[in-house]
Image (cartoon, rainbow, N blue to C red; front, side):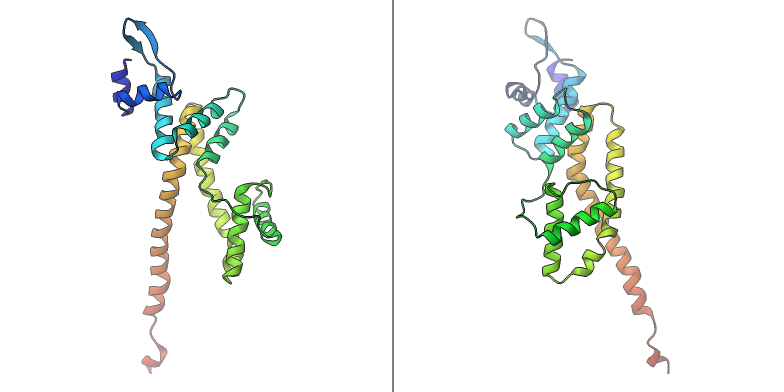
Amino acid sequence: MRIGELSARTGVPVATIKYYVREGLLAGGERTGYNQVAYSEEHVRRIRLVRALVEVGALPIAKVREILDKAGDPERDTDSALGVVARAMDRTREVAEPEPDDLEEARAIAERHGWKIPPSEPRMKALADVIGTLRLLGLEALIERADDYARAAQIVAETDIELLASRADREEMLESMIVGTVLGDALFAALRRLAHTEVSGRRFTARREVPDEKSCN
C-alpha cells in the first residue's frame, strides 16, 4: 500500500508517519520504484502501537523508542515484552520504604491468593504504603476486607489477560495492553461507581422504608 492508504488505514497523517520513520519508531517502506514506497500490514500494526503509546499512554517519543526497542527484542518472550510495556504504563507513584509490618501485611495478602510476587516489587511496596496510610487513618476495617478487593482484582486481571491472549500477534497484544491499561482502569472505575449507587440504594433505602415501631402503636 502507498503512504496515503497507510494514513487512511491508521488515521495518522502522512507527515506524522514520516516523523515516526525519522525518529526510528517505524521502519521505512520498501522502495518499489522512483519516488514510490510500499508499506505492509506490519506497518499498520506498528503505527497503531506507536499511536497507543503516544496518544493513549501519553509517553514522550524517547520513551516510546526505548519501549519498542526492549519489547521488540527477539530474545524476549511475550510475557517479558508485556512486562516492559506494563512497567512503562505504570502510574504507581514512588513511595518511601514501607514499614516492615505493612509490607508483611501486603505479602500475606498476596500469598493468600497464590500471587508469587517478591516484596521488592514496586507494586507490593505501593500496596504496603496504602495499608500504612489506612492504619494512620484508623481504617483497619478496610485492611481486614482487603481479600475481597484482591478477589475482585483477580477476576479483572484474568479477564485482561484472556483478552490479550486472544490477539493475533505480539504487537496487537502490546497495543491492547496499553489501551486496556488506561481505558480499562477508567472502565472499571466507572462500573465501580455505578455499583456503589445500586448497592447503596438497595441497602440504605430499604432501611429508610422500614416502619418505625413506635409509629405503629
